[in-house]
Image 1 (cartoon, chains in turn brown, red):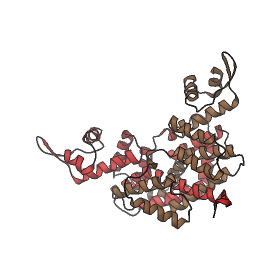
Image 2 (cartoon, one colour; image 1 turned 45 degrees about the vertical axis):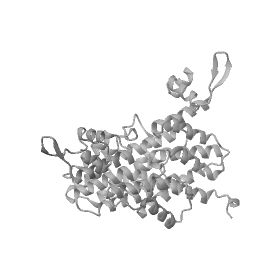
Image 3 (tube, chains in turn orange, red; image 1 turned 45 degrees about the horizontal axis):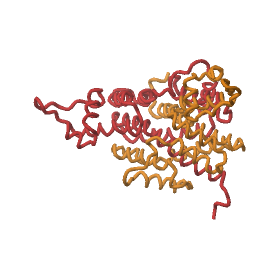
Length: 211
Length: 211
């Protein structure tokens, strides 16, 4: 175990915790007081830490996400669904309380974009919740889904699926889906920050500040 | 204070906490044991709760964000910057440790897109950190910024700025920037979930399941 700690950079108490919680499979017992860990264990530890440290997932959620990766028998069309449900357990995606204007706006956008999605997609509830919040704050200029948001989301999703299609190994696909969905939200948010500064400078440029 | 609680739906202990932490301005003292609160206080409480409950900000961060909203003297071109710095204090946007291939990929994308942004934009660090993590996980098919991500982010940012441009009141602009940036990340992530399901069905459709 101390060698696994050295190879992975993950402290022994954390390794023990991940073993206990089922995120990391047990090593192979080779004698009474010797357990062998493989390179696969080191890789798995890197994946666990990426989901928790960079993706910001709670340990229990990371466990559910990894369980999805470990279920390669699922039909391909369900891989995204499984990853999304496992990941989307933040309050944002909870069931809404009572009727919601946001839901109608989301449905309209799905219709307009020609998207075919199930009623259970967690993004429906997340988007509706945000729109309802904008409306409650009286921020009517935000309480809609701009065309740029819908088109931008579709461009991003097409890139996501193109990455998945680079492999035909189902376990590999599941890992790309999970890693790309958890960490991809941060990449999208980061690029949005960069593009906002550019567009903001473009629109609100102060001519005097340009030399 | 109990009337403020009733009007806003926010419990008295929370109201006291926000007052103490400076998120909510004090009411007007009208006699020795009477403080008057206005509709502006109710609106402010809704804004505080939206940032914390829906946007997921820690109370201290919400305080910094509201301080940005309360500084309408800032030049317009800096409003986004202030909001972004106040919001982007998650680990994702911290300084990177050591050299980073991700930084080079981010720089290339900024160049290719013709984006003009400062070195201090927090999105640069966030995007580089995610790309470095993909590479460390050996997920080379993800360790790049797909064109769809860059173009999608720009479409979304243009919609963000269009919402800001609906008003010429600087305080209003600041609030749209802050609310739209904090909650907008959740809206983008939600739409990405919806579009992923649609594109995934399109690419990996099982003909038998269609009647």
